[in-house]
Length: 364
Image (cartoon, rainbow, N blue to C red; front, side):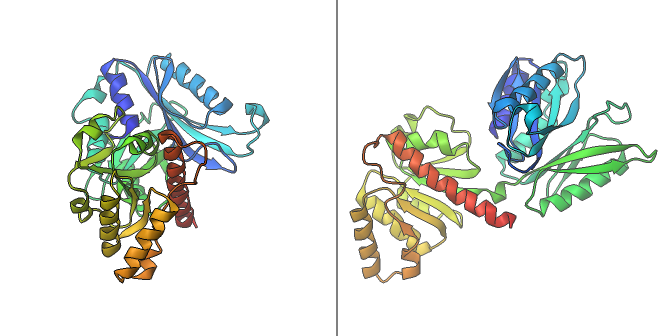
């Protein structure tokens, strides 16, 4: 389950109203990305950020005001990031606010949109979540939710034309990289409203595998669980996983033989080898090179260790173009700061740069 949904379920369990704050559009220099979220409840943000600063302060103030109203509502607000907001980024953001007051018991049902989205995340199914926006609080358009997958479409609206319109645009968005998107709908009477469509594509996330659950990997997990990746964590020692006190809801943990697990890894995987044994390190890397289905293969260690491994791969006549994709050491070498946290940060930075480069290529 995604962490923002987990936060919503926590608020519902406590019978607290909450506001979902979502960045819908950005232009120019902004401190946030499309799709960034905050879950606000009980006078605090319990999940996420939209970049901090006065932008976030203003957004949280608006969320607080919405929770003081008598009915649930939604609104779309445009924030220019200039002098009026006390910021000098120069761009602007559009923010969708959706309030759900604690009287809204339908959200707790097994057939609610929240429950459906939770199941989509659990099954790693791509989907579109669409929301009708009523900035004028017009009684003709109560806010509605729509869910689209490759196999199904769910609508909370009785308006067939509206549902067909949303399904058509959701189908188009599913085939594109850019998300979210706002489209305008006009009903039979000529009344116009906006529909926000958000895409969640698990299939587009970078698969990442971490071999080893020692002190460095455990320091790495809290960082990379917040990145847009599908995370697999492998070790043959259950007690090492038990030492990790962080959230594991978004990690696929495999306690099994290291080398045996390699065969089941997905294609284009980003692989980090951080085990307790040089022998195991070599066996993993060798199996990965033989399979050659990785986007990145990095191993912790010294320059000497990396050179010896490459020499052994060359002697075994593995393709040079595949061996060249093998990286050791990983992360920028630090002379003084060598704690697990410091090492984890530089390893994570390599991963962040890799994801950033991939996303920029897709945008072009």
